[in-house]
Length: 331
Picture 1 (cartoon, rainbow, N blue to C red):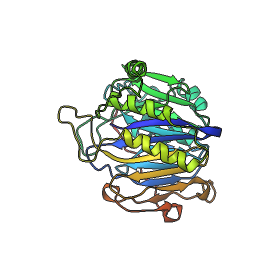
Picture 2 (picture 1 turned 180 degrees about the vertical axis):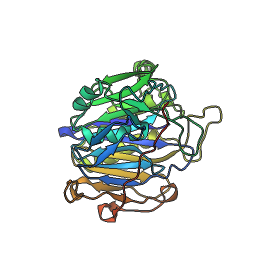
Picture 3 (picture 1 turned 180 degrees about the horizontal axis):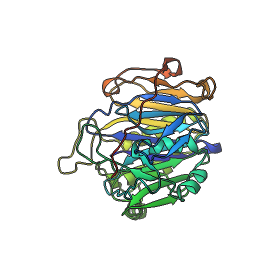
Picture 4 (picture 1 turned 90 degrees about the vertical axis):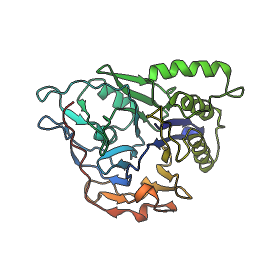
């Protein structure tokens, strides 16, 4: 469920897009967070603690988690479902715990670019702690994609209890099952056929991976950044699942509910609900991220994200109390 792509455009015009595929309304809203926020990993007495170095614009889930977003340095983070995920056992006396609900937010808070994030994450500074998705019986099993304004990317997964990081500019696409290494192998087959000859058309993760990989590379290097954003939107729509579609024998395939696009160079974060007629965006240059005067702000998207906004929407943000990340029981 979900697809993420990175477009490597002209003159450092880097754009990251993702779709959110989920069977139920995940009660998403837009949030802006200033620098200097004290955070807690919400894993009990031995929780990771940090103070945010960067402000960010994010999209939440269930009012308890960050699903993706971009920080003021131009680093984008996206979490997607990966059923094969297996996290290390958490001990209250070992490495500090970090709820999976704050995994993306931690990266956005702390790092300016992909290299900086990878260098820190390779040291395993925390243990991811996970539990059931709110209101559902399924364990939250996610992997993380990060990208920056240079076009660098990394995919972070936990396989058999160990962190695996794929780091490089070539890692432009991520979907879901199987694990990323196997997705790359599957996509090699379609690269040999060539996307102008035939592409897989189902809503399975491996098929969406192949389509997104071909089309994001096939896009021209547009001079007009607005056209580039529109083109990337068209790619992520092509990899989306039509609304109302579910696959009974494939519980990890669900309808697309919304899409985000991050224009790293222009510092714009676009949001599009599949149930509203238009996209809108937040211009990060219009948000006060300072620790001294910045406030936590939110843009309420409503049930099934059907509240309609148009154009640059930072003026619609309202001051709000920050949500508490879901405090998950040790796995």
